[in-house]
Image 1 (cartoon, rainbow, N blue to C red):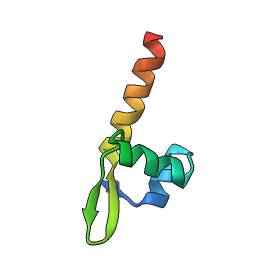
Image 2: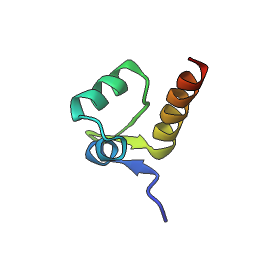
Image 3: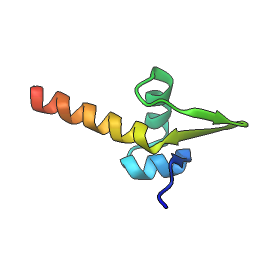
Length: 61
């Protein structure tokens, strides 16, 4: 079964961006996340949605 929630390092690797960039995207609301205890978890679907939105913007440009 595929993971539904990713850790910050896993999301960073999946998107090939820096940790700081991921935190900026999360803090701006571009990538939603959950708190589980003191940890942040990013739904896989949130990354897929973010990528789809970026592609749509590129195509529209």
